[in-house]
Length: 322
Image 1: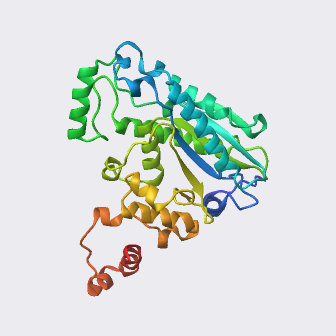
Image 2 (image 1 turned 180 degrees about the horizontal axis):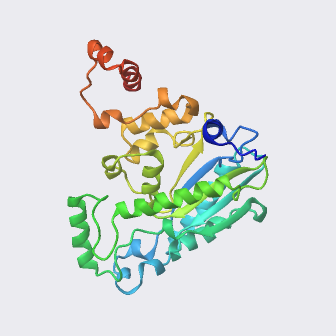
Image 3 (image 1 turned 180 degrees about the vertical axis):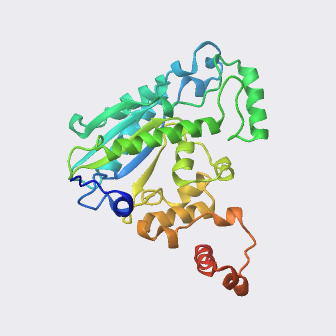
């Protein structure tokens, strides 16, 4: 006789599996029967100074993806490598790093210099990832025309403005979202770790806008919040670190003053503070959401709450806004 559940029994079994998976999803990094072990840190790095940063006319004769680092950019990358090494090795113990890198020459060169700071046995691997490449501005770029186009972008809005023959930040968002799906699969499949005692750190060597879009997608920031973000400096890195409750936050490693300089609003900084100490199981009741971004007039009439049976739900909403 087949032991495969059918009908109601199948539904109950599926519900049980779903419930168990939900529990594991919230606590996999500590649950002994779950495969997922979250990286300790995800570190986003912008490339070092490039010839295009120094002189925009370089894009007129050289394809964007071939623009090299300047000598200063090489020095910046070496310094970033030492800085990242200090961050990931600060607690001692068994730690390793895994690198993702944009296919552009300036990011690959930055990775080479960063990697020189690490002992070979500390590096799990490196992978070129096309989806974290620079925003596409078109092919060869005429300097004066690009200045005019960028002035138009500033009036239109950075996120939705699409460069002629190129991309918008919204297009970059879509491919970064696809990359994040692959990243979670790598984590789920255990491709990024060596053993259970190993503390894994992911380093993504990319570009300024792409890194800001990555943060936007990860932390669910709005388009308006994105528009107020400041760009990364050359070889600046920002550390998303796992808090004790299982959420990543920029405030585990960085300070509120740094986040303010990066363009995060008080509301966004409060959300990072919540993530730095929150228990993932408390998300539904305690999540520091961005509800005030969308709503500013709540109907808290108790009679209406009783009539439509939504009192409990409104109570949760009020708690979020306290």
